[in-house]
Length: 270
Ligand code: ADP
Ligand code: MG
Image 1 (cartoon, rainbow, N blue to C red):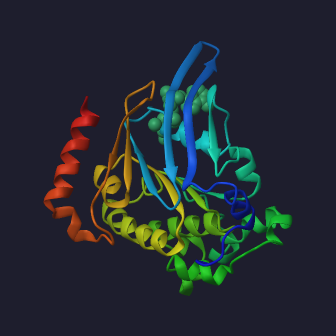
Image 2: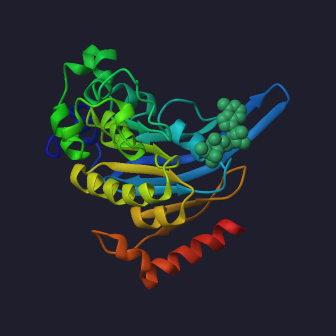
């Protein structure tokens, strides 16, 4: 799977010589309610490069999920534009060039691991005809090769979330949008999952936009961390994480790591 790329995405990228993958330009979102309106996001602008791992961090309600849903083509911005390899979010979505992972793995309990991973194919037979990688390859990548026939109740929370990651990878999208995917896991599982995700990311060469509340998670995973202010969400600062890769648990006790964590904590406090 690592060597094959979504052909639609590839032809689109051929027109773009830059390494820009996602261009977010002055994106604002206001939700109209019966009782008034909520300004969820104000003029967010940032560009994400191919293969980059970027994390969005900020207090609850600051518009992180809103921004992710706009990029994913699930909702429209009130103003501003998003380009994904030169395409609109809905075009990228139609090309199956984006994978989503949410906090809840949302697996069907009566289906096996394979049955859950292959569900998107059954829902979209036209896309299934263009399949680029086998379920076995994906299972191998997420470390679940020996659990192909297991049912969700037989899996731990971390393994269930790996099934959700596998399902998001089934069309071999170039972009992964992950909204607090480890938010419901216990802390020990969560700590392990971040290194597991780094391994998957480095092998699959995806561009990842990841939402979290966790400062250590953001630092360990990211090339850059986007810090958002409380509602209406604005981008307060974008921080380059210049820690060497590959990263392992030891990095969390390094002096640089602690410096990044202090800096982020201060930014998030104000
Ligand atoms: P975060 O993911 O950072 O916690 P969200 O993006 O979910 O924040 O929400 C940002 C703000 O927009 C919140 O105040 C939330 O209540 C509001 N909001 C989000 N989705 C909707 C919606 N569909 N209708 C109305 N308000 C919404
Ligand atoms: Mg959210």
